[in-house]
Length: 461
Ligand code: SAH
Image (cartoon, rainbow, N blue to C red; front, side):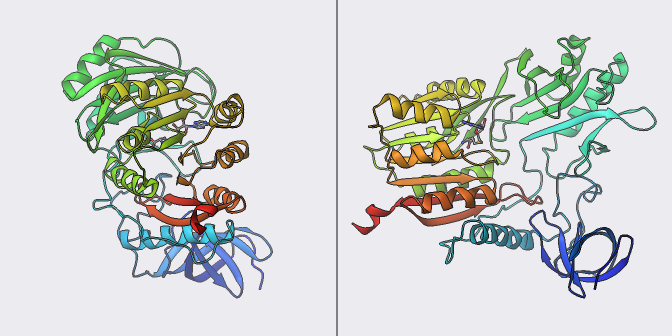
């Protein structure tokens, strides 16, 4: 049977899509329903209909799923940040494993996956060490901050995010009060006018250090001395107050330049026995407790020997590089963000580690260039890849294969591009030996994975 827009259908939700949406069937017609949970029976209104499938809006839960829980956050349904808060944490883990498995089978063409159980979180709330709150105005013209509603730029006012650091609430209130008191306007995307675009808060969970960075449309923030005073009073853990200049009409949150207006332009945090320096622009995993577990797994998979060389590609501030350097002869890191490379070098010095070297640039350019310069002799015992969501460029994958590493450890935040890249390695002499998903982002549909690939000839020896 075919359905049309505005039809109301009753559905049993039998599956969960990659974005966490519920999937139900009505007379052979598949309907994707955001906010419906696997196991629910729901009434949905068709909002978009194709021949065999459509999208529905959840209208009523006729029979709730046994996996359904009351979301902790009242804005959970509107906010684009958490897609799975209405699903029990146990079931979220099942969903993530299944999502990973599905992508590896469908896109990667793998069977009999050597998959370990997902490493879950002990406390899936307030785990994040970084939050970026957009600043805007509501219909009445009042300055607000909160989160973007799913897939839009409409700001949902929210001050007590269930996954953010609880210290953020007082900090954002303090910034908003400061803006009101001195008449400092929120940036308006449609007119390009106004000053404050985002409030970025970073905290070092193990050191307690906090950075507050205001992303501003312009080069100076009026009354900055007053801001510094109220922020320091609000939270003495703040060791860094920065402004980041972003005067472009863009969705990208941060501009290129960051200046400290109080304290240093970085904070420090520890993972295991290592201490890391992190600036506003640098990538740093948002969930430090799970990061330790993820890096331990990467280290286990790398199975390093003291005489071995490692290339850590997409190394950020050198977190994995330094972690591995304790067990290897030499580690080379490559990272595109210069500020992060600067941090990586500082971090090596901070931890008195001398067997690491970092290069700034795109991995797909730096590594092939180094390989050419070496006349094709560049080799590495282990290669670590930890790319952003879009995965690795094929030029890089080709060079990695030419470097003939015995083992490749691939850390991924996107199962689809992971599956694509693993397939490439599979077709070029590597065997997928181990896979372990790790939950870094409770309540979201994201799943982080670490994989081990071994060179085929080594296996048959
Ligand atoms: N391994 C690090 C960072 C992983 S996130 C950690 O665990 O903390 C991915 C990193 O890749 C980011 O730091 C990003 O700036 C960097 N990056 C993005 N595109 C890149 C490219 N083409 N070449 C090198 N690095 C890149």
